[in-house]
Amino acid sequence: MEEKAESMRTSVTCLRRGAQVHNSAMARCSPGEMSVVMMTITAYPNDAAPIKREAITEHLEGKQFKGLCLKPVKIAKRTGVRQRGSFYNSVALRYVNGAGNNKCIKVFTNSKLHVTGCKTVDEFIETSQRVCWMLSDVTLKPLHVVDFDVNMIGVQFYINAALDLGDLCSILKGSQYSRQVLSACYNPDRNNGLVMKHRFEQPSQPGLHSAPEMQSDEVADAGKERAITIIVYRKGCVRLCGLRTHMEALPSYRFITRVIETCWSSIATAK
Image 1 (cartoon, rainbow, N blue to C red):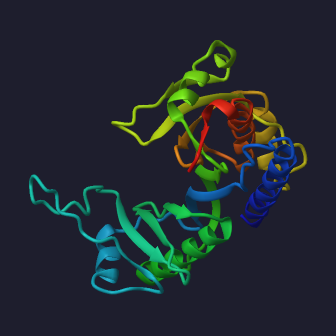
Image 2: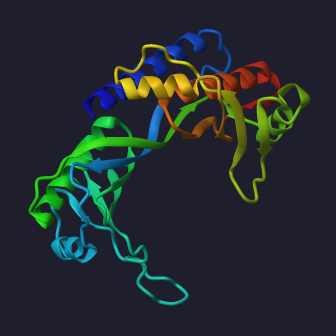
């Protein structure tokens, strides 16, 4: 597990270095540094023995355990029925760390954890450790995470001006970008951002990962086509969603910033 965690830390460093090199040619749009806004990670504890939902609920009902608590109950507006527990095979928890950041965790009855809201791998490790400590009290067995899989990463950065999204959408739909842009839509009545699908080839990262299993996956995926969602907001915020690795952000980051830089005079507006 520590090898995977260190590989993710290295990926973040490589991503920022790659973005800095690219930014030297982006004089007008001057994109800011990319930051991770959210990750969704599945964690696997050392013991996959079944855990009863009721045991976890009783253990945490009305109290906190080292920052962990049950997610607040939601009442459906139409039916008035309690919505917590609608997933029969999991319990929803919330963890608030010392910085006040919320993490959402689903604990499945097979001990698997689904953690959402972490921005760094160290936040994920801290959150999963707290959950395992709580589960150890419930099961009376020492639990710890032995492996994890990254399901989704979201990153964002800022352009130094507001953008005319209608004109940008028309540009992205042009024939010169038909190979890279699968779809582009800007409908201010439904969404306050321009939403597009960007197609690219999986970047190769030779030697980046120290974990052998990650190296083999990387070699197998290199060159395969992927599509992620790019959302551009009028005030210059750009989000890349649906990434599976940090380095997948770089092709889409380069693409959208190049388009904005090339068309700067026709789409940039005052903030």
